[in-house]
Length: 318
Image (cartoon, rainbow, N blue to C red; front, side, top):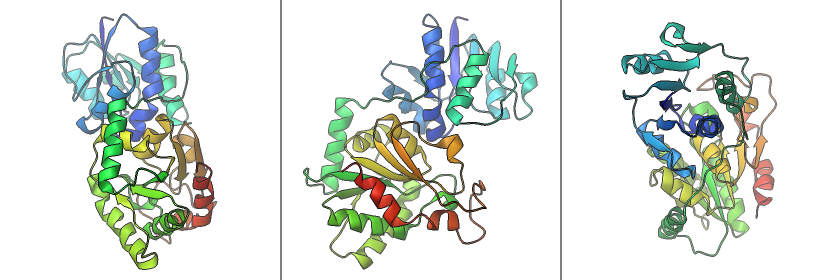
């Protein structure tokens, strides 16, 4: 093996959880030229690993081997079409014939172990299982500047909110709960910054509207849709904690060492809980985890997690 292309997962959270497996390969093959192929929105994640990892935005030819971390048929077809001789990955999604080293997938446990199990079966010993990312001093400075432009006084402690979730509305803790939490933190002298992608802008505005109606004196710093991934990392490391749904921002913050309070509803915390310092809050109802994108009933799994519980966890970091 002279050169290896590692095809990263498509979503930010999955890509963060794949970092220990990628580190396993790099550690076991120091003389191999390794490149990570990742979608443009998350490609720069690999510049935060601290090891100058080479990365590209799409699958290209010219590699002797390819390691597929996504389970999709499409990812296997892409590396096959790129004429990469050795193609490794789990035997999933009817793609076994496209792989030269197919690995039988295990029973699902935590996603980090799932990725590390793959590389272990391929002969790369496993190391630490916690993703680790580093925000540079430049990122930290830019994060502080972004917060100041949004209205931060540079004195009060900050708690970040990540109220979005790309998977669907069922994963979202209600905006009015986030607003109530923001009001309570404001009374403690804590600033709140809302972060997320452009798709989360309506949710951010809804939180602000609820907050204005119920706590006219309180306000949030709104950076939803205003940060790329490195800038988001810079903002998060300025915060004492992150309150979040099961989301990519959750995994990013935990990997940066930021304390996370995560509300889980339809998804399974045994598979996707963050690996860093965190608390996971759930409402133990019989219908969860259902893995549905939208709740067909009353969203009891998320609405049953009260603001007081989340506030108590957030206050542990203040």
